[in-house]
Image (cartoon, rainbow, N blue to C red; front, side, top):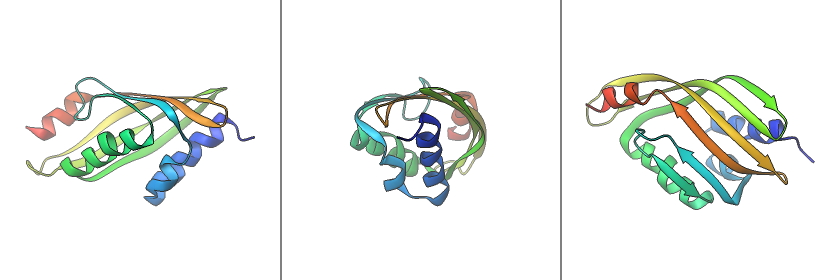
Length: 129
Protein backbone atom coordinates (compact mmCIF):
# COMPACT_ATOMS: atom_id res chain seq x y z
CA UNK A 1 0.00 0.00 0.00
CA UNK A 2 1.33 3.44 -0.94
CA UNK A 3 1.86 6.11 1.68
CA UNK A 4 -0.14 9.34 1.72
CA UNK A 5 3.04 11.16 0.70
CA UNK A 6 3.50 8.89 -2.35
CA UNK A 7 -0.13 9.33 -3.41
CA UNK A 8 0.02 13.14 -3.22
CA UNK A 9 3.43 13.21 -4.89
CA UNK A 10 1.90 11.16 -7.70
CA UNK A 11 -0.76 13.84 -8.13
CA UNK A 12 1.90 16.54 -8.48
CA UNK A 13 3.99 14.39 -10.82
CA UNK A 14 0.91 14.03 -13.04
CA UNK A 15 0.37 17.79 -12.81
CA UNK A 16 3.92 18.36 -14.05
CA UNK A 17 3.18 16.07 -17.04
CA UNK A 18 -0.16 17.88 -17.67
CA UNK A 19 -1.82 14.47 -17.17
CA UNK A 20 -5.35 15.22 -15.92
CA UNK A 21 -6.32 11.53 -15.72
CA UNK A 22 -3.28 10.95 -13.52
CA UNK A 23 -4.16 13.94 -11.34
CA UNK A 24 -7.67 12.61 -10.75
CA UNK A 25 -6.76 8.91 -10.46
CA UNK A 26 -6.37 8.78 -6.68
CA UNK A 27 -9.20 11.14 -5.75
CA UNK A 28 -11.93 9.29 -3.85
CA UNK A 29 -15.54 9.46 -5.02
CA UNK A 30 -16.36 11.24 -1.73
CA UNK A 31 -13.30 13.51 -1.63
CA UNK A 32 -14.11 17.01 -0.33
CA UNK A 33 -11.99 19.52 -2.29
CA UNK A 34 -12.07 23.09 -0.93
CA UNK A 35 -10.84 26.12 -2.85
CA UNK A 36 -10.33 29.17 -0.62
CA UNK A 37 -12.98 31.87 -0.26
CA UNK A 38 -12.05 34.80 -2.50
CA UNK A 39 -10.47 32.52 -5.11
CA UNK A 40 -12.09 32.46 -8.60
CA UNK A 41 -13.45 28.93 -8.13
CA UNK A 42 -14.08 29.16 -4.36
CA UNK A 43 -16.18 26.42 -2.84
CA UNK A 44 -16.17 22.80 -1.79
CA UNK A 45 -16.62 20.16 -4.46
CA UNK A 46 -17.19 16.44 -3.92
CA UNK A 47 -15.72 13.77 -6.17
CA UNK A 48 -13.47 13.79 -9.22
CA UNK A 49 -16.10 14.97 -11.72
CA UNK A 50 -17.12 18.03 -9.66
CA UNK A 51 -13.47 18.84 -8.97
CA UNK A 52 -12.55 18.56 -12.64
CA UNK A 53 -15.44 20.78 -13.79
CA UNK A 54 -15.45 23.39 -11.01
CA UNK A 55 -11.70 23.73 -10.50
CA UNK A 56 -9.56 22.58 -13.43
CA UNK A 57 -11.95 23.47 -16.26
CA UNK A 58 -13.00 26.73 -14.57
CA UNK A 59 -9.39 27.88 -14.12
CA UNK A 60 -8.56 26.92 -17.71
CA UNK A 61 -11.46 29.04 -18.97
CA UNK A 62 -10.26 32.12 -17.09
CA UNK A 63 -6.46 31.85 -17.25
CA UNK A 64 -3.69 31.05 -19.71
CA UNK A 65 -0.73 29.02 -18.53
CA UNK A 66 -2.19 28.25 -15.11
CA UNK A 67 0.59 26.45 -13.26
CA UNK A 68 1.30 25.19 -9.76
CA UNK A 69 5.01 24.90 -8.97
CA UNK A 70 5.77 22.69 -5.99
CA UNK A 71 8.52 23.96 -3.71
CA UNK A 72 8.20 21.55 -0.76
CA UNK A 73 6.12 18.51 0.09
CA UNK A 74 5.87 17.70 3.80
CA UNK A 75 4.94 14.26 5.14
CA UNK A 76 2.62 14.35 8.17
CA UNK A 77 1.41 10.76 8.12
CA UNK A 78 -2.10 10.62 6.66
CA UNK A 79 -1.86 14.35 5.95
CA UNK A 80 0.49 15.91 3.42
CA UNK A 81 1.31 19.61 3.10
CA UNK A 82 2.45 21.17 -0.17
CA UNK A 83 3.99 24.63 -0.45
CA UNK A 84 4.51 26.39 -3.73
CA UNK A 85 3.37 29.05 -6.19
CA UNK A 86 0.56 29.58 -8.64
CA UNK A 87 1.31 31.52 -11.82
CA UNK A 88 -0.97 32.40 -14.72
CA UNK A 89 -2.21 35.20 -16.94
CA UNK A 90 -5.84 36.26 -16.84
CA UNK A 91 -7.37 35.89 -20.30
CA UNK A 92 -9.57 39.01 -20.24
CA UNK A 93 -7.14 41.49 -18.64
CA UNK A 94 -3.86 40.04 -19.93
CA UNK A 95 -2.38 40.56 -16.43
CA UNK A 96 -0.10 37.89 -14.98
CA UNK A 97 0.13 36.93 -11.32
CA UNK A 98 2.24 34.89 -8.93
CA UNK A 99 0.70 33.80 -5.62
CA UNK A 100 2.05 31.72 -2.77
CA UNK A 101 -0.07 28.70 -1.92
CA UNK A 102 -0.36 25.89 0.60
CA UNK A 103 -2.31 22.72 -0.09
CA UNK A 104 -3.39 20.46 2.78
CA UNK A 105 -4.22 16.89 1.76
CA UNK A 106 -5.88 14.09 3.73
CA UNK A 107 -5.43 10.50 2.57
CA UNK A 108 -7.11 7.34 3.84
CA UNK A 109 -7.56 3.89 2.36
CA UNK A 110 -5.14 4.61 -0.50
CA UNK A 111 -7.31 7.53 -1.75
CA UNK A 112 -7.32 11.30 -1.42
CA UNK A 113 -10.26 12.14 0.87
CA UNK A 114 -9.67 15.85 1.59
CA UNK A 115 -7.98 18.82 -0.04
CA UNK A 116 -7.88 22.40 1.19
CA UNK A 117 -6.19 25.33 -0.49
CA UNK A 118 -4.77 28.44 1.21
CA UNK A 119 -3.51 31.14 -1.15
CA UNK A 120 -2.97 34.86 -1.65
CA UNK A 121 -6.31 35.61 -3.28
CA UNK A 122 -5.43 39.32 -3.53
CA UNK A 123 -2.73 38.59 -6.14
CA UNK A 124 -5.20 36.59 -8.21
CA UNK A 125 -7.90 39.24 -7.86
CA UNK A 126 -5.50 42.01 -8.94
CA UNK A 127 -4.79 40.12 -12.17
CA UNK A 128 -8.53 39.85 -12.83
CA UNK A 129 -9.14 43.63 -12.55
